[in-house]
Length: 541
Image (cartoon, rainbow, N blue to C red):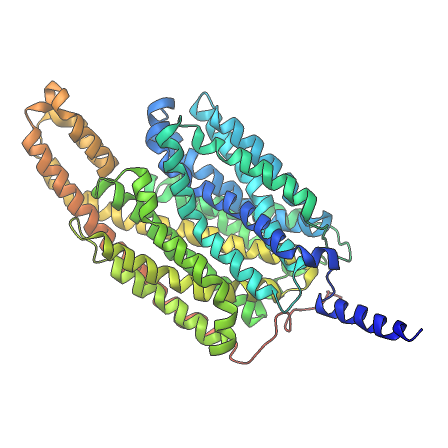
């Protein structure tokens, strides 16, 4: 009998130590985190890996320029448009089930993509991959919060953040590696066994998790968000290609404004909104959403420019270019898990400001890269730039997710993910437009002097420095162009210089925007030790 109280005390202590998490789940929480990070990297890598396969897809499937653009972007548009509804579905019906469904859809769509027989088929299957990704990404972050006790959640989210930031580099590297040895579809097929392994591990290891009090879904809010964010991404992507003043771009933005306005109005009035607009009154949530948006604005834009710089200007292979970006991924993975410890030591607000200020510094360093500059300059810029998000994003993402009630973990995760995708798309669109405007302006007068026989050169130059380089290298075997070889070499050198000039301007514009955002986030971020969730509004009357 004397042992009974001590046994009861030990049992209570164990329960306290797990933070209310099932002891069996608590014991395997780090293994579960590894599985969730594997699923996450699968989704993020699918964005960047397809960029490496563009030349092979162009050669094998012969898509039009518009089809090629949408083979790349259909995934992102569908993915971003469905994130909020997917997060809400996971909250209501089960985050584990949403993750399982997402992985299964992703594996099927990746298989179909790898064996697509036409550009139209590939475009459809890429869009289906986006559906799977929308179910996967918010589920990984919301499940994470349900298997870690409150004291460990910041560290777990920081680890998740590190792999989210490194996923783009991993995708580029993996894409370059498989394309070196296999057919063009291997860039998609490589995801299939990984998704299936992740599906099995999720089924075995992850616990069920959903909102404690079932609430009805918000179909009108979901529809408005899908139309609004889908149209916004469509306009952002189409703008640089068709022109910001084109009818399709204007209509897309008009639809986005109307749909997103309706979404906000409806969510403010609905009894059971998908995304309660009052969440944006929470300083940590509001500052986190702004910070994450513009961190990924800078990161996606940087990778967009750097990948072209290394391959089209430096002349490196896709695999070598992928390996060259590893310093960014390694820095993210090394520093991100230490974010909570650094925040505890120096203060969350100061750490966020420090991290956000490193972004413009890294962008400025990269903006001094020239056609002949050493690779070490790019390494320095990438390391400094990666250190910024590695310090800031764990705290910002924690602020978004843990500011909300646990019942809304899926929606909170989806907000975090949506800001990433929208910010990244805006960054690529703005810096891509700056780059293209400078590039085409610099070549216009020179191209105008070419004879009619050089029409293919003019067309290639307008498509970009990479396409021009391919044509210049093939010119000796084309009789109509062989006699123009010296002139073509000169034009190619000029094109690379104009590309670099546009890249430098774009990176400096991004640095200026990142600096302004750092100041804004610092002003909004609470200076007191506000606990996550302290400001979360309660249920509506």
